[in-house]
Image (cartoon, rainbow, N blue to C red; front, side, top):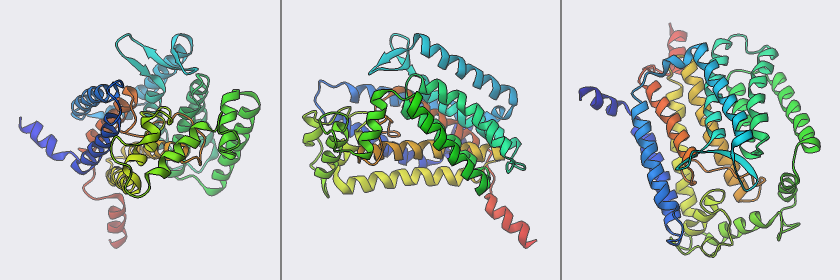
Amino acid sequence: MKKVLKHLKDMDWVLLLAVASVLSLGLITMHSFSAEDPFFSRQLVLIFVSFVVFFLISFIDFRFLRRTGVVVTLFLIMCASLLFLLVLGTTAHGVQRWLDFGFFSLQVSEFAKLVLIILLAKYFTKRHIDIYQFRHIFISGAYVGVFFLLVFLQPDFGSAVIIALIWLGMVMVSGISFRHLGLVFLTGVVMFSGMWLFAFQDYQKERVVSFIQPYADIEGSGYHARQSTIAIGSGQIFGKGIGYGTQSQLRFLPEYQTDFIFAAFAEEWGFVGVVILFTLYGLIVWRLLTNARRGETNFEALFGMGVVILFISHIIIHVGANVAILPVTGTTLPFMSFGGSHVFVSFLALGIFMSMRRNRRVVSREGMAKEVTIV
């Protein structure tokens, strides 16, 4: 009992309260719709299960993730799962994302993002001294390229972009030189050009075109972005009130519980609600960064930074698509959008993070550097 109480005391309650608040806002938004939609009750169950798993795994000592054999095994398991998904995965809206087990389904790409963070944290931890050598960027990019390709072939362009952003973000925080960073961006441009010519399907090209010219085809490829911006703009300062969002309630806004939950929320809560939501996300990012700087080793620090990059990438792409400044890719909003795999993996990442927090440094890395300088 004493161990449990000590463990609860060591929890970052500011982080957890911020997460709980965002979850509540998402549930309230879902609950504001008609009783015909079961999203609220199902999401409530998913959150409860995910929180129980989070609490249990936070007791585990995850320092075993530093072992090369463990990381390689996770990488191979995830590659096999993604390959299996291409053959026997469940298809919805033209995308083969889920493994269907009858009473529940798993979106494998969500787990791939977490495994990728662990893989890159391990790789850059061993090579943080000579990270300036471009070959390490190339080798890490090759690992990521496997995940990127397997996810892109589903085709799940949104998750593939998130995977690329996780790699780019972790490469940058690991200490890459500006010269090499330019080569990375040049490589990205070349890859995008190649995918546009040989890999993108017609509907994916339409989404990119509608991003550049959002109102060129408002009845077709630009319809979603148009309805989303109308919903957000109509919320004005204080919103229309919970349950009174006309764009979402009358179903002009598609996928309001997942892809466009930010627009549905902004319509009902207005600018004030959006400020509150972004403040809560700011608290989550701040607490993650604060704890990451005090990681026991570079692995814990890089893992924490990877989780931050994951959440920020989801937020930017989801909100950007909702306000029509980015293409619509079906990306979820952390802790708000409906989805079992999304919520479960988010709590799984936080559970691992909380476990690592128990072994954190008392003084931050910046503080230690100052002490060494003074001495």
